[in-house]
Image (cartoon, rainbow, N blue to C red; front, side, top):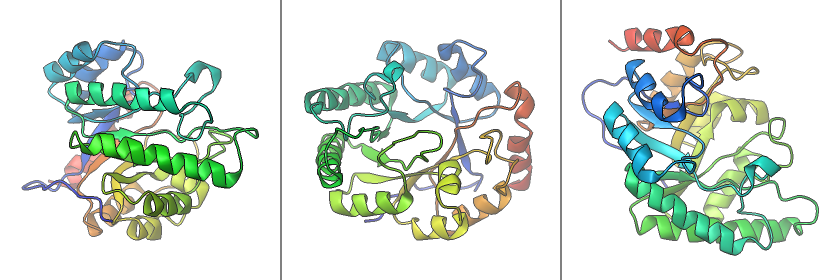
Length: 275
Protein backbone atom coordinates (compact mmCIF):
# COMPACT_ATOMS: atom_id res chain seq x y z
CA UNK A 1 0.00 0.00 0.00
CA UNK A 2 1.24 3.47 -0.82
CA UNK A 3 0.08 6.47 1.16
CA UNK A 4 -1.05 9.08 -1.39
CA UNK A 5 0.76 12.37 -1.20
CA UNK A 6 -0.77 15.73 -2.09
CA UNK A 7 0.38 17.41 -5.27
CA UNK A 8 2.62 20.38 -4.69
CA UNK A 9 3.64 22.98 -7.22
CA UNK A 10 6.04 25.90 -7.01
CA UNK A 11 8.04 26.47 -3.82
CA UNK A 12 9.44 23.17 -2.44
CA UNK A 13 9.46 24.60 1.10
CA UNK A 14 8.40 21.91 3.59
CA UNK A 15 4.91 22.45 4.98
CA UNK A 16 5.05 22.79 8.76
CA UNK A 17 2.03 22.35 11.00
CA UNK A 18 2.25 23.78 14.51
CA UNK A 19 1.07 21.53 17.29
CA UNK A 20 -1.28 23.69 19.37
CA UNK A 21 -1.13 21.32 22.33
CA UNK A 22 2.55 22.20 22.76
CA UNK A 23 3.22 25.55 21.09
CA UNK A 24 1.97 28.93 22.37
CA UNK A 25 0.48 27.30 25.45
CA UNK A 26 0.76 30.65 27.22
CA UNK A 27 -2.36 31.57 25.22
CA UNK A 28 -5.88 30.12 25.40
CA UNK A 29 -6.34 27.29 22.92
CA UNK A 30 -8.52 29.21 20.46
CA UNK A 31 -6.07 32.13 20.38
CA UNK A 32 -3.20 29.85 19.37
CA UNK A 33 -4.50 29.51 15.80
CA UNK A 34 -3.77 33.16 15.04
CA UNK A 35 -0.50 33.07 16.97
CA UNK A 36 0.93 30.25 14.86
CA UNK A 37 -0.32 31.89 11.66
CA UNK A 38 1.45 35.11 12.67
CA UNK A 39 4.60 33.05 13.33
CA UNK A 40 4.56 31.72 9.77
CA UNK A 41 2.93 28.30 10.10
CA UNK A 42 0.35 27.37 7.49
CA UNK A 43 -1.14 24.31 9.19
CA UNK A 44 -2.13 23.15 12.66
CA UNK A 45 -2.44 19.89 14.54
CA UNK A 46 -3.15 19.13 18.19
CA UNK A 47 -4.22 16.32 20.49
CA UNK A 48 -7.96 16.98 20.82
CA UNK A 49 -10.55 19.64 19.92
CA UNK A 50 -13.41 18.18 21.97
CA UNK A 51 -13.43 20.72 24.81
CA UNK A 52 -14.90 23.21 22.32
CA UNK A 53 -17.80 23.08 19.89
CA UNK A 54 -16.67 22.06 16.40
CA UNK A 55 -18.06 25.27 14.90
CA UNK A 56 -16.08 27.41 17.36
CA UNK A 57 -12.79 25.66 16.57
CA UNK A 58 -13.57 25.82 12.85
CA UNK A 59 -14.11 29.59 13.07
CA UNK A 60 -10.78 30.09 14.87
CA UNK A 61 -9.06 28.08 12.16
CA UNK A 62 -10.83 29.98 9.40
CA UNK A 63 -9.99 33.40 10.82
CA UNK A 64 -6.33 32.46 11.14
CA UNK A 65 -6.21 31.09 7.59
CA UNK A 66 -4.43 27.88 8.52
CA UNK A 67 -5.17 24.33 7.40
CA UNK A 68 -6.33 21.71 9.88
CA UNK A 69 -3.94 18.83 9.33
CA UNK A 70 -4.51 16.28 12.08
CA UNK A 71 -5.98 15.54 15.49
CA UNK A 72 -6.63 12.45 17.59
CA UNK A 73 -9.79 10.45 17.98
CA UNK A 74 -11.20 10.47 21.54
CA UNK A 75 -8.73 8.54 23.77
CA UNK A 76 -10.99 7.42 26.61
CA UNK A 77 -10.38 8.90 30.06
CA UNK A 78 -7.18 10.87 29.47
CA UNK A 79 -7.05 12.19 33.04
CA UNK A 80 -7.14 8.61 34.33
CA UNK A 81 -4.22 7.61 32.11
CA UNK A 82 -6.07 6.12 29.15
CA UNK A 83 -4.28 6.70 25.86
CA UNK A 84 -6.66 5.32 23.27
CA UNK A 85 -9.37 2.66 23.09
CA UNK A 86 -8.31 0.51 20.15
CA UNK A 87 -6.94 -2.32 22.32
CA UNK A 88 -9.05 -2.00 25.48
CA UNK A 89 -11.52 -4.84 26.11
CA UNK A 90 -15.19 -4.02 26.55
CA UNK A 91 -14.88 -0.59 24.93
CA UNK A 92 -16.09 -1.39 21.42
CA UNK A 93 -19.14 0.86 21.66
CA UNK A 94 -17.16 3.77 23.04
CA UNK A 95 -14.51 3.36 20.37
CA UNK A 96 -17.12 3.41 17.59
CA UNK A 97 -18.85 6.44 19.11
CA UNK A 98 -15.46 8.16 19.26
CA UNK A 99 -14.93 7.50 15.56
CA UNK A 100 -18.25 9.18 14.80
CA UNK A 101 -17.39 12.17 17.00
CA UNK A 102 -13.98 12.56 15.40
CA UNK A 103 -15.45 12.42 11.90
CA UNK A 104 -18.01 15.07 12.85
CA UNK A 105 -15.26 17.41 14.01
CA UNK A 106 -13.08 16.58 11.02
CA UNK A 107 -15.86 17.50 8.60
CA UNK A 108 -16.40 20.82 10.37
CA UNK A 109 -12.67 21.57 10.43
CA UNK A 110 -11.84 20.42 6.89
CA UNK A 111 -9.42 17.84 8.31
CA UNK A 112 -8.62 14.76 6.22
CA UNK A 113 -6.49 12.78 8.69
CA UNK A 114 -7.28 11.35 12.14
CA UNK A 115 -4.95 9.53 14.51
CA UNK A 116 -6.37 6.45 16.27
CA UNK A 117 -4.43 5.95 19.51
CA UNK A 118 -3.75 2.29 20.31
CA UNK A 119 -4.01 2.49 24.07
CA UNK A 120 -2.29 1.12 27.17
CA UNK A 121 -4.11 -2.18 27.54
CA UNK A 122 -2.74 -3.50 30.83
CA UNK A 123 -2.04 -7.06 31.94
CA UNK A 124 -5.69 -8.11 32.12
CA UNK A 125 -6.66 -6.95 28.63
CA UNK A 126 -6.05 -10.28 26.93
CA UNK A 127 -3.33 -12.26 25.24
CA UNK A 128 -1.01 -10.60 22.72
CA UNK A 129 -3.00 -12.23 19.91
CA UNK A 130 -6.31 -11.00 21.33
CA UNK A 131 -4.93 -7.48 21.62
CA UNK A 132 -3.71 -7.58 18.05
CA UNK A 133 -7.00 -8.90 16.67
CA UNK A 134 -8.97 -6.30 18.62
CA UNK A 135 -6.72 -3.52 17.38
CA UNK A 136 -6.87 -4.63 13.76
CA UNK A 137 -10.66 -4.93 13.81
CA UNK A 138 -11.22 -1.54 15.40
CA UNK A 139 -8.77 0.38 13.23
CA UNK A 140 -10.21 -1.30 10.14
CA UNK A 141 -13.69 -0.18 11.23
CA UNK A 142 -12.42 3.37 11.73
CA UNK A 143 -10.79 3.30 8.29
CA UNK A 144 -14.00 2.13 6.65
CA UNK A 145 -15.92 4.98 8.25
CA UNK A 146 -13.21 7.52 7.42
CA UNK A 147 -13.01 6.39 3.80
CA UNK A 148 -16.71 7.14 3.37
CA UNK A 149 -15.85 10.77 4.21
CA UNK A 150 -12.73 10.90 2.04
CA UNK A 151 -10.51 10.78 5.14
CA UNK A 152 -7.63 8.67 6.37
CA UNK A 153 -6.78 7.00 9.69
CA UNK A 154 -3.20 7.18 10.93
CA UNK A 155 -1.43 4.95 13.42
CA UNK A 156 1.63 6.15 15.33
CA UNK A 157 4.32 4.17 17.15
CA UNK A 158 4.99 5.83 20.53
CA UNK A 159 8.00 5.05 22.67
CA UNK A 160 7.31 3.41 26.02
CA UNK A 161 9.73 5.65 27.88
CA UNK A 162 7.28 8.50 27.39
CA UNK A 163 4.17 6.31 27.45
CA UNK A 164 4.80 3.10 29.40
CA UNK A 165 2.77 0.11 28.30
CA UNK A 166 1.62 1.62 25.01
CA UNK A 167 0.57 -1.15 22.63
CA UNK A 168 1.96 0.25 19.38
CA UNK A 169 5.55 0.58 20.52
CA UNK A 170 7.60 0.03 17.36
CA UNK A 171 7.66 1.06 13.73
CA UNK A 172 8.09 -2.57 12.68
CA UNK A 173 4.88 -3.48 14.50
CA UNK A 174 3.08 -0.58 12.82
CA UNK A 175 4.22 -1.78 9.41
CA UNK A 176 2.98 -5.31 10.13
CA UNK A 177 -0.36 -4.02 11.40
CA UNK A 178 -0.92 -1.78 8.39
CA UNK A 179 -0.36 -4.80 6.18
CA UNK A 180 -2.76 -6.88 8.29
CA UNK A 181 -5.45 -4.21 8.42
CA UNK A 182 -5.15 -4.05 4.65
CA UNK A 183 -7.19 -0.91 4.02
CA UNK A 184 -6.14 1.93 1.69
CA UNK A 185 -7.30 4.55 4.20
CA UNK A 186 -4.79 3.49 6.88
CA UNK A 187 -1.28 4.93 6.89
CA UNK A 188 1.69 5.59 9.14
CA UNK A 189 2.19 8.65 11.30
CA UNK A 190 5.97 8.74 11.64
CA UNK A 191 7.05 10.80 14.62
CA UNK A 192 10.82 11.04 14.27
CA UNK A 193 11.25 11.85 17.96
CA UNK A 194 9.53 8.62 19.00
CA UNK A 195 11.24 6.64 16.24
CA UNK A 196 14.69 7.79 17.33
CA UNK A 197 13.99 6.79 20.93
CA UNK A 198 12.54 3.44 19.83
CA UNK A 199 15.16 2.35 17.32
CA UNK A 200 17.13 5.14 15.64
CA UNK A 201 18.64 4.72 12.15
CA UNK A 202 16.20 7.36 10.92
CA UNK A 203 17.65 7.80 7.45
CA UNK A 204 16.98 4.19 6.51
CA UNK A 205 13.71 4.17 8.44
CA UNK A 206 12.34 7.12 6.46
CA UNK A 207 13.33 5.43 3.22
CA UNK A 208 11.90 2.06 4.26
CA UNK A 209 8.52 3.49 5.30
CA UNK A 210 8.13 6.06 2.52
CA UNK A 211 5.39 4.07 0.83
CA UNK A 212 3.11 4.04 3.87
CA UNK A 213 3.96 7.34 5.60
CA UNK A 214 1.25 10.01 5.40
CA UNK A 215 2.34 12.35 8.21
CA UNK A 216 5.68 13.18 9.84
CA UNK A 217 6.38 14.86 13.18
CA UNK A 218 9.60 16.34 14.51
CA UNK A 219 11.23 17.35 17.80
CA UNK A 220 14.70 17.20 19.28
CA UNK A 221 15.97 14.12 21.08
CA UNK A 222 16.23 13.53 23.98
CA UNK A 223 14.50 16.64 25.37
CA UNK A 224 11.67 17.03 22.83
CA UNK A 225 12.43 20.71 22.36
CA UNK A 226 12.91 22.70 19.12
CA UNK A 227 13.85 20.35 16.26
CA UNK A 228 17.20 21.98 15.49
CA UNK A 229 18.87 20.77 18.71
CA UNK A 230 19.84 17.53 20.39
CA UNK A 231 21.04 14.47 18.55
CA UNK A 232 19.04 14.84 15.32
CA UNK A 233 20.12 16.81 12.25
CA UNK A 234 17.00 18.59 11.00
CA UNK A 235 18.57 19.68 7.71
CA UNK A 236 19.59 16.12 6.93
CA UNK A 237 16.21 14.64 7.87
CA UNK A 238 14.38 17.15 5.68
CA UNK A 239 16.67 16.28 2.78
CA UNK A 240 15.93 12.57 3.22
CA UNK A 241 12.19 13.24 3.27
CA UNK A 242 12.57 15.27 0.08
CA UNK A 243 14.64 12.50 -1.49
CA UNK A 244 11.85 9.98 -0.83
CA UNK A 245 9.26 12.24 -2.44
CA UNK A 246 7.44 13.09 0.78
CA UNK A 247 5.22 16.14 0.24
CA UNK A 248 2.91 15.83 3.24
CA UNK A 249 2.83 17.97 6.34
CA UNK A 250 5.52 17.99 9.01
CA UNK A 251 3.99 18.38 12.44
CA UNK A 252 5.98 20.39 14.97
CA UNK A 253 5.12 18.43 18.09
CA UNK A 254 7.73 19.73 20.47
CA UNK A 255 7.86 21.47 23.84
CA UNK A 256 9.59 24.85 23.47
CA UNK A 257 12.67 25.20 25.66
CA UNK A 258 11.45 28.69 26.55
CA UNK A 259 8.91 31.10 25.09
CA UNK A 260 7.55 29.71 21.81
CA UNK A 261 8.30 32.69 19.60
CA UNK A 262 11.87 32.97 20.87
CA UNK A 263 12.59 29.42 19.76
CA UNK A 264 11.43 29.76 16.14
CA UNK A 265 14.82 30.60 14.67
CA UNK A 266 14.94 27.11 13.16
CA UNK A 267 11.86 27.87 11.06
CA UNK A 268 13.45 31.02 9.66
CA UNK A 269 16.61 29.07 8.81
CA UNK A 270 14.61 26.47 6.89
CA UNK A 271 12.80 29.22 4.99
CA UNK A 272 16.09 30.85 4.04
CA UNK A 273 17.52 27.53 2.91
CA UNK A 274 14.58 27.01 0.53
CA UNK A 275 14.58 30.44 -1.09
